Image (cartoon, rainbow, N blue to C red; front, side, top):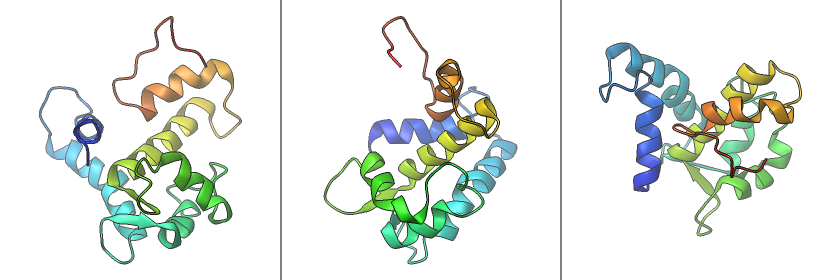
Length: 136
């Protein structure tokens, strides 16, 4: 993982933003992010390939986002930053989960309207703050 990815993982765990990880924060992180990732990672190599991500997209923790096993290639191409292999790492998975959580929280399962984008972005990207230059 890159330094930026590690920072985003830290911000995902440290929900209180006190630069410490409490037992409750750690348990929440394990339940919401680590365990579901491990369930998807059938070959236990800490990355998800297309064969693993397809069923994962249709599992409870990622379904209802318009992403399915059928469009797994498109999903991977949109978030896989290194073109060396067809896999996503744990930081990429966290981003997918945060997008899902942002969508659910801000749109309530409906289409995400333009007005809801700042709400969803704050959840999907830790530390994201909209400024006047952001175009959406």
